[in-house]
Length: 67
Image 1 (cartoon, rainbow, N blue to C red):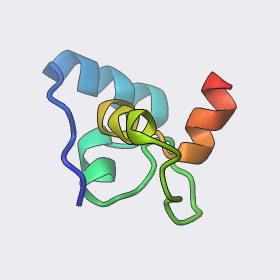
Image 2 (cartoon, rainbow, N blue to C red):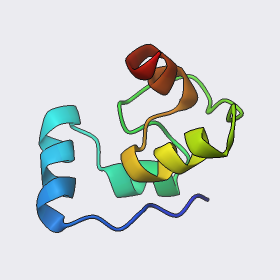
Image 3 (cartoon, rainbow, N blue to C red):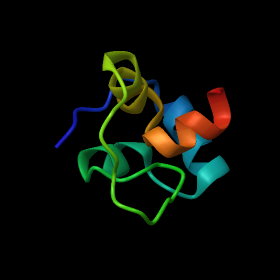
C-alpha cells in the first residue's frame, strides 16, 4: 500500500470532483486516481512513483499526460 502525500482538504475535494475518484483511497488501494482499470504497472523511476503519491496517476496516465 502506497502512502499518499499530504494535501489540503480543498485540493483533495477538487481532485474528487474532477475525477470522481477519491485520491487517498485510490493510492492506498494501489489504484489509479483517474479510474484506470488495468493493474498498476511497475514504475519507470523514483520520480514517477513519487508523482503517484502526489496525484494518484498510474504510470500509463503519467505517460499520456506528461510525455
